[in-house]
Amino acid sequence: MDAYESPKEVDFHFDVMCPWAYQTSIWMRDVRDQLDLKVNWKFFSLEEINLREGKKHPWEREWSYGWSMMRIGVILRRLDMSLLDKWYALAGKALHVDGNRPHNPDVARHLLEQIGADPAIVEESINDLSTHEEIKAEHDRVVNTGGFGVPTLFFPDGQAFFGPVLLDPPTGDAALRLWNAVTAWLEFP
Image 1: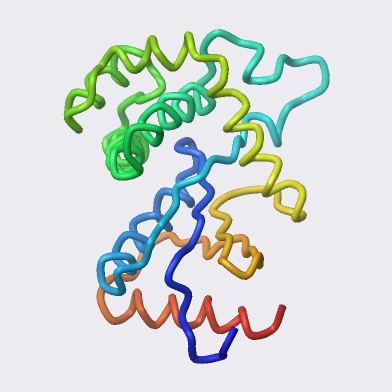
Image 2: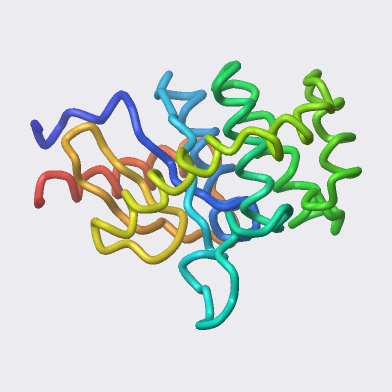
């Protein structure tokens, strides 16, 4: 990659339960809108990476906080990536800003209605066991590159970065300066 060539696409791995990934997603959307960047929203499970011995994997439970929200996200992404984008933005805000519980099925249904999606997607996600495989594959992608958390960014050349972890995401020119700083590291694989 040319040192001056900014990527046109990025895979953004997240878990709705992670406040840091949510804050970074706000920055990522700002950068996307300014640069016409394609953002592919992908999953990573904090429940799975932090699983304690003797506990069930999230896919072994009928409903599991972060994992179940990602299963809803899989169904939305199959319909249109923009629905997943809206879902993540709204569910993240509900959890991390408003103090709501988007991991509660009734709240999840309400949030789906707010983005213009069918609230029955909650039940569809529970009944569609293939959603587990998509989440596992994306989670394993991060783990197999040495990743342990989110946000994790993957670039078209195969490089991946953990972060940036943001508390107060920059906007406008500051958001672009941070993007340029992050992507400058792509010159040094």
